[in-house]
Amino acid sequence: MGALWHGFADMGAIERDGEFVIARGEGAYIWDTEGTRYLDATAGLWFANVGHGRTEIADAVAEQLRTIAAYSTFGDNTVDTTVELAERLATIAPVPGSKVFFTSGGSDSIDSAVKLARRYWHELGRPDKRIVLGREKAYHGMHVGGTALAGIPVNHADYGRLMDDAVSIGWDSGKALLEAIERIGADRIAAFFCEPVIGAGGIFPPPDGYLAEVRQICREHDILFVADEVITGFGRIGGSWFASSRFELEPDLMTTAKGLTSGYLPMGALFVAPRVSEPFFRPDAGVWWRHGYTYGGHAGSAAAAMANLDIIESEGLVEDAARLERTLHEVLAPLADHPSVEEVRSGVGAVAAVQLVDAGQIGAVATRLRGEGVSARPLGGGAIQLSPAFVMTDAQVGDLAAAIQNALPQR
Image 1 (cartoon, helix red, strand yellow):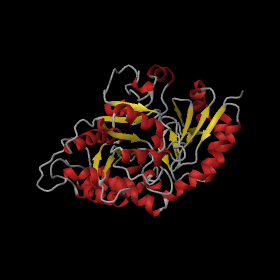
Image 2 (tube, rainbow, N blue to C red):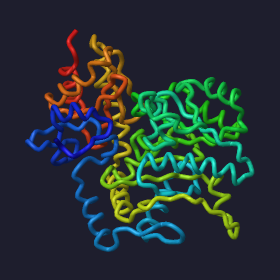
Image 3 (cartoon, rainbow, N blue to C red):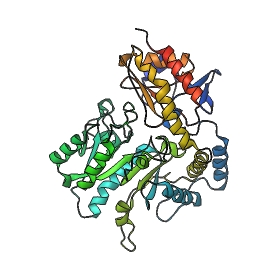
């Protein structure tokens, strides 16, 4: 019996059938311990934006670890590499003048945003603004705050009530947000959390005009707008560093992780617009935000992030993500005609989903895809997740589409 307990897994089935063990990766490919090569359709778990096996990142981390691996960022402590990364991120932030608060990953970033949103309103003398709004289908990590905010019911099941003042609303309608504000009262709502493109909930691009509408509603009702860019950040949306920039959202808070280091080391970052940071940065005000993580701003992770950003910039990978947006949309579109496919969702960034008519077939399709030389992830609603590394070529996207065609159920 194996000792490893996998996340989001039927451990009994894994004990019976065995694990899929990866031994190495290079570019858009991974290899298992038997030496079989697979096209990585998901860039790990949405994160390997620059591809696998980038020695530049490994070398940068090794050099940092030889110098100083980590130090606390509590109080006035920090490491020079961490300061350098924060300054660099501030230059690409969707809102000029943003501050950067480092976390250990996406779930940390979300819970930090929940706490800071509430703490901000308390500092402004409005402590009743505590309720946080999320959307159906949304995924915001698996900490208590993120699980409560998310709109995927099976992820809530059997935990009891996690956070009483988290409310889920319809995912695709500004009217749903307005109705929630009317029902609850804007004077009780701290923030609205919004994935620009819904990710783990099924890969749903925003309806036309939706993001601009809900952003304006939040402005008009004095509700903080939180862009969850854990998946979409650092180029995945194509053409811009962030979806918030592409869609001109000017978020009050923005959560990030995955693409910050391309997954080479764990790290997240919460971007805080000047409006929200100002009460905490007043000289001589003595205001504390009593929150932080042991590994927030970890120097080795910061070195990985710096090298990762260097690669994205020098190789034009934000533009490559825009290329992949077009290629995925064009190459996957014919799959929508297959009788086992309900729809293909693509067209906004280097993400796509192939939705099956029979959601119960998704596990079998993922297994057959491995037989076709593709590692892909089945999403709970019966869709195949596609979120390739930005270095995936158009020819490899063609190989991916052909493999999916072969793996689909024949009806």
